[in-house]
Amino acid sequence: MTAQVERGPLRRVVIAGGGTAGWMAAAALSRLSGNGVTQIVLVESEEIGTVGVGEATIPPIKTFNAMLGIDEDEFVAATQGTFKLGIEFAGWGREGEAYLHPFGAYGADISGVKFHQIWLKLRAAGIPLPLDDFNMSATAARMGKFDRPGADPRSALSQLDYAYHFDAGLYAGFLRTYAEARGVVRHEGRIAHVRLDGESGHIAALHLDDDRVIEGDLFIDCTGFRALLIEGALGSAYEDWSHWLPCDRAVAVPCARGGPGAGPLLPYTRSTARSAGWQWRIPLQHRTGNGLVYSSRHMSEDDATATLLGNVDGEITGDPRPLRFVTGMRARPWVKNCVALGLASGFMEPLESTSIHLVQIGISKLLALLPDRSFPAHERDEYNRLTAIQWAQIRDFVILHYHANARGDSTFWRECATMPIPETLERKLALFRSTGRLFRYDDELFTDANWTAVMLGQGVMPQQHDPLADTLDQPQVRDMALRMTDAFRRTARAMPAHADFIAQHCAGRPI
Image 1 (cartoon, rainbow, N blue to C red):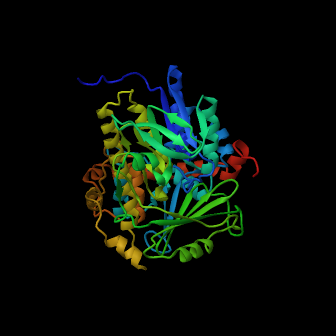
Image 2 (cartoon, helix red, strand yellow):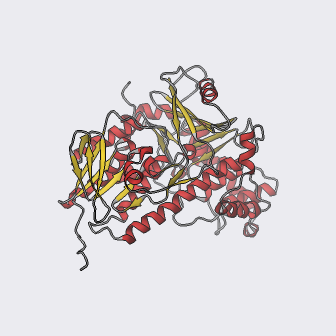
Image 3 (cartoon, one colour):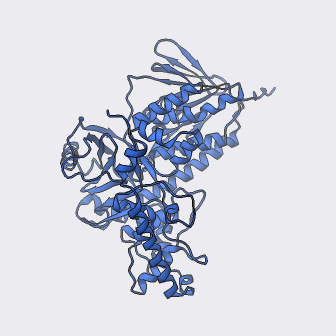
């Protein structure tokens, strides 16, 4: 006789692990308690540290915070945050050169012709206007300015887009306060054992080291690289992408902001290519985050640490912190009644600041496919399918930076330039190299503007522009382009300096 399937809303959701991923999940899932049935609990131990490498984000985080009803000024002040208009990549094409990957669109499409195709047409006609001049965020970033976008779509300011830099530990604490105020219950303790149901194989309970037992219906694994639930208990395999993304180590260190040569508070992240990897610089209100991501086959930890410490622009305020990782993702991030988020679900090196975003899309997909107590297989399978697609798309975008380098000054960069790449990226590169064409698939995170910025920034230049661009009147297009760049420059000049905007609206308390 077939066992009866239990249905009905989830009674208890158990989040294993805190940190950014755990408390993002707790804050978002706290809304479930509004049904009068579901309880959200989180188990974490203060004795277990968090990685906290990623302190830079991308624009979709604004959507996540807005969903929670978070006031932006309050959030930025509480996390010692700053605003981010893009990422500067120094030395990724050729050593000594730099380009900006800004947020937001370039220019405006005309009669169905993509703006970057219009730019390519003008360039071919001997009118080489800088591409950054057609992006509001890039124009403001280069001037060190920031303001919130305007509501009037006719205004140049409406074209500005942005994200944040913030202290990830402070963000987790901010979300903890938010979640606990909405009924989330936190349990302090270490997980000693994960008990499975003998019949279904589902996780039945977490046994803590003080003999407490936390039962639940749905379990969220936010235990970091340890992946205690999704791998340790349920055996979900890990897909290793290190043959495409060979960096497997990082060392991080904070420094004081405003040291000699530091300059103004920049509204963008900086990524500087080094001999066997790259160095990040993330400006916060109270300090600057620095780190070096590198390949241990090409650089020792001592050399990496020395390289990092020799290239910071402020007084060192902490000990260098090493980190080991393997870039890749969980083959099945949702197994039975367990969903992995954060580092338990995989690791994408923070080159394009997608770490926190990957937590966000995991949460949003879980909410969209939230199961009842019967855990239908089609919801789990769809979650895993959509997650795999988005991770692979982001992976290809990160690989592009390495593969399209033109350095040739070290074994590491030569290997990256000649390595086999995924067929999906090969197709994208071939289309762009031919006529600059780009296509977006399956709710892809990165837009045409993102791919255009990195392709052109690293010297991937189309052989010709789309023939549709030749249907446009060249003098009219040129005049329109010049009016547009003039409007962006005038708007940026009128904006406050980044530091002045923060001081007026969202300055954090001194730490």
